[in-house]
Length: 194
Length: 197
Image 1 (cartoon, helix red, strand yellow):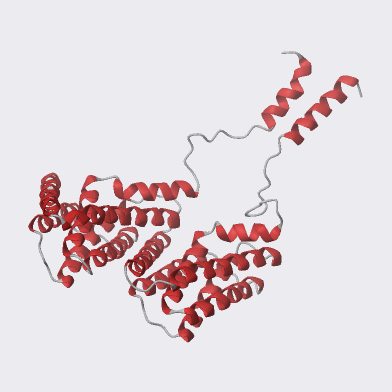
Image 2 (cartoon, each protein chain N blue to C red):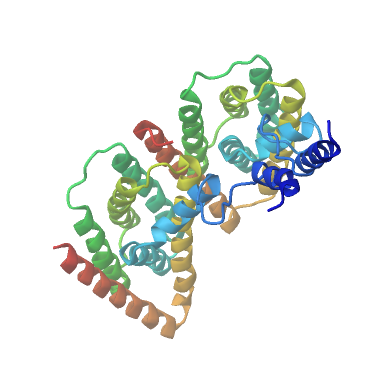
């Protein structure tokens, strides 16, 4: 290289910006990580969709009360997991949520509202605790939590949207079939947890 | 100084000038002045605007009297806290805002029937807390004015959007948003206590 090109090379080196194509940092990473967490495990997905399906089968007010109950109790479980309070049998509880929530969809169980909310709430606690204990360090707490709650709500909404087929006879049969599938999935997760 | 050295220095200076690095002294630098910077600073701070939006939704559900009180009182309380430099102690800002998420989201999810006086008191409390958290970052007058104007517009738009709702799925959706806000606040408290935030 000729000596007269040295200042040009020096200037380019000194003004170089760092390449950030693959560096995941900052607030967007926190939001996207939170958004991805609830959909990262099939055991979580089937339970949350089942909540929406059951709500759709039960109709108002359960159709919106159950998806409101689940994130609140799940957040409380996440809170317990974050501050390090242990919850025994978390994996079993999560697997059982798939089994039982799938079963109530399969049976189209018309449970009283308080009982339905209690069942969904208990399982929400297990799911939340697992998420809270698994949260990756170093993320943005607020945006992660926002993404996490939004993704959970979206899964419930998906369940409710699918559940709208309940108005037709073939839809009711399809929902019960979906409940059977969810329950079977739960059994396989329970087998693995045990 | 030789011609070669002079030309080299000139090229070097020209390149430095043509390759500026953005200044990061201000939290948000739009290039449109401190008022716009303050407005964008607020708009890019979800910990600030989400609890306010939740309170505006609650006020809107209760009616125009509640909405008007929140719309005027909250920005004034917020601006007063910032200009008084009532910054919250280090570490308390996140806890305060997590509490604001929990309180406003919980009240909205439960659709609590509050009187206009209580709503006004909540607006003062939230304005003071948010302003205190904001004051830890920035206390410039023009920036705070820009942010306070944005708060006013946010509250006006959000509360007016729900004022027209008369029950049904619209109200349910608003209450679901409240439950999500409260759930986010609860997780944020956990994050903060765990020392991860």
